[in-house]
Length: 447
Image (cartoon, rainbow, N blue to C red; front, side):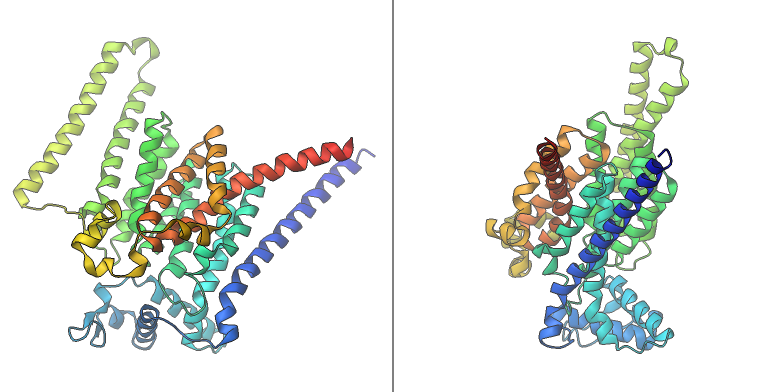
């Protein structure tokens, strides 16, 4: 009898593991099936204009090599001017497709390049369900139930399906996977303070930068989250390690993409990250001083003097930046697309070409209901649950979803960013609700 209890616990853990793998496998299949309907009903083809241009670029990369691809002048695009492809696109999508094509043919699976491009988005969307599981688990403090519910929701949410169907060979198909992976590894780095997790977050961010212009959202969201934690008095050495490593290494890696280059450290869109980095170093210096001065010597006068030194140092740095800008004549200016996201009326007044595209219009209320369904109602409940017991991880989730809701309301195409993030927040609410009611049912059944 004494040995039966450990055996039962081991058997229970094994059964739970098998059930978890089965649920994730079903989510993986469930994510694939609706995205393959177009191929099942018609045939394996690339549709829409931008996906077909991406396919032509991938074909050139496969046939001519990466060096030729970066220097390729495409006279069939932007007619009659033509287009220098290597310096005007994010090459991650093409590089990923070419890598899959070469790898499959290397093991004697003779597939067509067009088929690789057609099925790439559904493949990465299915993998996003697995990443969402781990992100939900990390945000919930190791609660696997939240991760499983998040995986189920993200596999069928319409706001993500519409951008990752078979044949829609566009940047979002692979970028959302890289986006969620970046968030996951960054939260793990904040929770653990591990440099290996920071490195994984930087590599994921580099993949996102090489794929999609939406990486600017990430490089502004994470500094905003850091500032929120600092204002909430939640500074920690783990946060300093995570963000400092992410900003420095991530910026260096993003500069390797030709379309980004030195914009990663000179464009106005990245100024928030740079300012947050400087502020965080000030907090780290203050914490370092407090740790190495005995408590008996930490008088109010000494602390006030240290604060004055830090503020003067920050002012000197800011003044030197302003002087350098005046001497060199460089003025970092925000682009029109940035102002279009801040001011909903800017595009219609100043950028009529961008405003004429339907997916750049502000989102109607019905768009949220059609693209998110019941998740729309679960977002406030999940936010309330997170703020009941705030942690570094679920504060990030709240900041992420609130920012995504705002930008999705400004530009309807950004619902694709909101959808998977909202699934995680909705999973927090739904998982807690199910846990409460199942506990009550057990008590009723036991009674």
